[in-house]
Amino acid sequence: MARPPISYNEADPIHWLGNTAMLNLGDDKLRLRVKTVIQFSRTDPERLQCVARYVAAIPFNVPAFAGMKRTRKTLRQRRAVGWYSKAALFMAMLRVAGVPARVRMIRVPPELFRGLVNTRFRVELPVVEVWIQHRWVATDSYLYDPSYLATAREALAERNWPMGFGIHRNGQSDWNGVDEALVMIIPDRSRSERPAQYLGVYDDPQAFAAQMRRRTFFRWWFTLVRNRLLSIRMNLSIRRLRREAGG
Image (cartoon, rainbow, N blue to C red; front, top):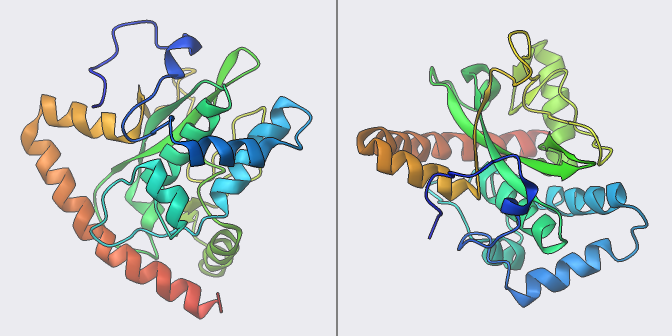
């Protein structure tokens, strides 16, 4: 069960190492996989990069009508999954490795989905914040597999769009395991240190949905239906984009 809204100091890393039903940190296969992925890493940044690359290698897509998957299923099947399931797996692997990690929900503009689906809605998506060198650092470098990322960048350049296909033209997909790296957005810090797109922090993506349901059932229901409908169209568009690129 997702935790209730946090009432403690959210900046304290000790609170972001615990288990949830979605993360399933006690799963033996998850723990073994983490050990295998990071076994040859010599430094903390290298360990983080290895985990990010492992999750990124899982094909990206938005399965039609699919809900958020527990990390056990994502790890076992390694089928195409989207923003929420990839964020959960990345964060779970980091926590198993002893690295505090949490979900930061961000609000993205409709233009991010151009080329995949036409919508007028701003959508909330998860990225992961990692406790590195005594500070929280946000990244979504685990999100897109190399094949999709290359195809999306090429399609974006051909159309000369600033955003589309799930990425920002100036977004950063290469992560050094130390500094912030986001490919979906360019954080807007013009008004304060906290970017305007940043919303709250959560133990996992399901906790955000659970909080929304408690606060405003109608909004939660509307968002659920909207996202399910968008997922059908995005699924078809991503598959078509891959076919046209030969991958």
